Length: 273
Image (cartoon, rainbow, N blue to C red; front, side, top):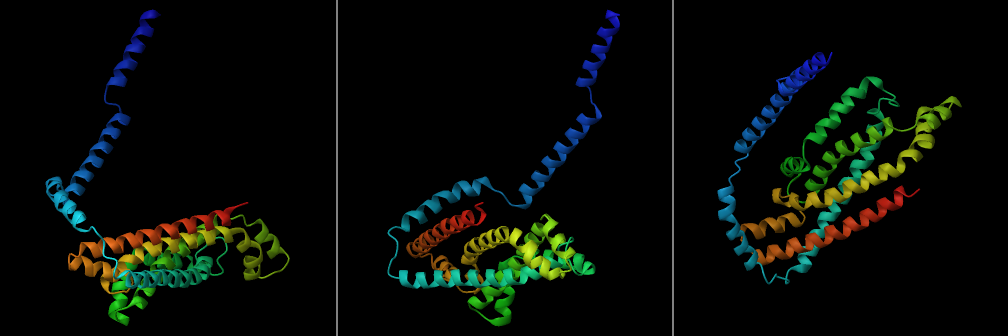
């Protein structure tokens, strides 16, 4: 009896140390992941030697950026205000467009089930194209200036916000909605009075997040001629005017930090029970 138990333990130990199906699968996955990152490293052109030789140059640029140039602060403030305005109008326009699209793209309440998947595909297309690319296209269509930036922000945010809104609707409690519908009220009446009050704080919080995100993202839209502080940023880089560049970056960081704090405070107020 003891010998059989010892043999069973020996067989179990041999199995643990051998190549089981689970262990082979694990090592195959590890090999695939390793191969993926090796190929990605090569495709990304990662070169640590270039980094090591470039850091002293970066340090020299940082040293030459002091003291900052303050004579153009009013101009920079105007360009930053332009950037914030672009983000605000683009985000607001996107939110207004996202609400009806979210209703169509929500499986549980859509009034047009046949448009559910086309609506989702359309939103995925908008989300898949960055606002930078949209702005580049609209610069060619409407010309240089912040209006192209507004349109670029609005289209990308439309897709992203509507998708998030639709996800919130699909995960919402439909008990009040169904109760209002049972009284004979129309679909849109039930949505307005039973569903929207329940998900409104989350939707407002999501909108604030996208406003905050778009303010940061729109700082670079000027690189393609879409107005805002990005244009001044590009001009400073092209001229290697590092004191001017340092001033612009510092002002952007100050404004973004203040807006981030304001957005966080508003979101806390919205989700407070």
